[in-house]
Image (tube, rainbow, N blue to C red):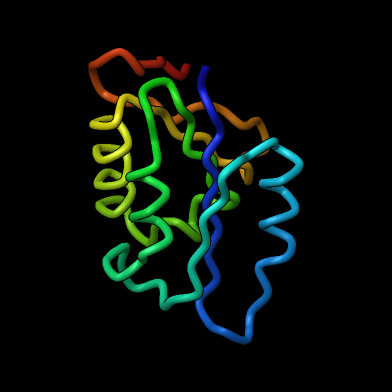
Length: 113
């Protein structure tokens, strides 16, 4: 059975994760991982690393906000590749019409029009 694994991030200790965590709980995510680190790159984000390592085939990595998880197109591609390697997909809750991010090739492939 697939799971929804959540991830939230803020840039500084002074920022509050409450809104993102509430969205992930409402989505039914369990477990939920989080980081409070600078947003220059996905490197040095232990919560994101743990979230991806927790994924099993068929799971969905649910991001509270896409731009909180990744700061550039290259970071996004790197995250998608790591998630794909685990046989999982990605969903971002901050899209007006949430959809699964397309993963190139493999069992988790989905086409978005």
